Image (tube, rainbow, N blue to C red; front, side, top):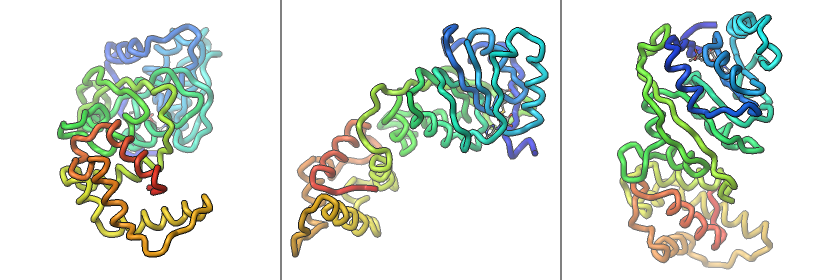
Length: 285
Ligand code: SAM
């Protein structure tokens, strides 16, 4: 195990740790999931307020240290330590997730949490500043990206505070930020793979028009293939001589999105466009 590979930067500022846990507004009935507890600087504070904590830690030495730290305390029985990789672990039920995230798994953490059912109430997560700013970015801003849209499809994300790199040992190379993630409940009734398939095309060059991005190599071909599969699955005849590209282009015109640019499109715009495609049997996954 090595510090870099596991992103082991321990939070040394007790005020910041307290603030992160406070922001979760924990209730005495809450079951909390903590990802990457390390030596337990956040864990002990969570234990004071929650009913139960499951901490998933990949490094057995860290897990042992945490276990020792709570041994013999009244909180010991509330803590369940799972040794393993969060990405592969079976997640328990949880109301709240708190994590000073190992940065290597920033994306997997957020998407795994959002696809977990039943939905959690809130997650308080620390990320590299740049990643955090993309999570909270709004359409029209320079950081609005495929990541922003894909996450905001499922959740409201806001920036809670900055955490300077000097608060960690060893100090990482970049500053961090803490965000609050509140899932939309119920989630929008759209398959993630479909939405992701659309944003993958439109954000390839986010300042180009929707129409221009559809011209990229392979896009029409892939969509036509998906459309034919859909026709077969729904028992529809694939009419002869259909100009598929023409059909897609006129849909883009009709919806009014042809000349839009992903850089300025909202999640709602993207959902409307996706839904119009689905109406004519065109799928992105
Ligand atoms: N939460 C502690 C704190 O704030 O001081 C430690 C934070 S440290 C940035 C990240 C922790 O996550 C390390 O203890 C590391 O071993 C652990 N970790 C790294 N990758 C992991 C993974 N895939 N699953 C679970 N834990 C992981």
